[in-house]
Length: 129
Image (tube, rainbow, N blue to C red; front, side, top):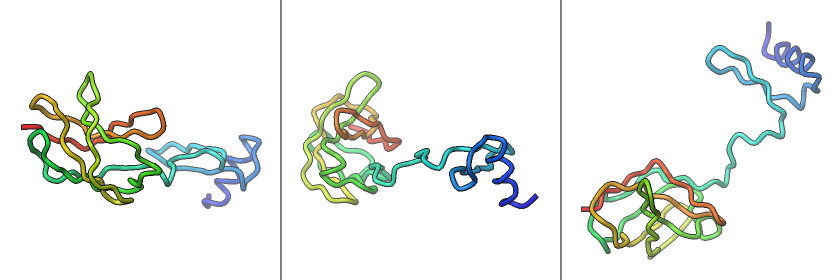
């Protein structure tokens, strides 16, 4: 069965038009999603690294990633399991944010950002010495 005929078969079984169906093959299972389904927004901020990986309170660190401009990221935090500690942003562009380490106890923290009213914890970690 070709990919095209597989998509048509899935669309027929789901009662959807072929052009409105997106077929995904993952882990040996076929999933069908409406074409309007958003899998990932292209303008979603993502953190890819922090430099340096550790530092002290008031040190400046640089977070790099994509879509980090002021229109997408309104604040940056160091987050533990219970709290989000707001950092002062020193410089910000679409690909990097320079911030000051907020007043926190020594330990490991996730670097997170605020967009709108929500805070999104990223898989980037920073250690406060």
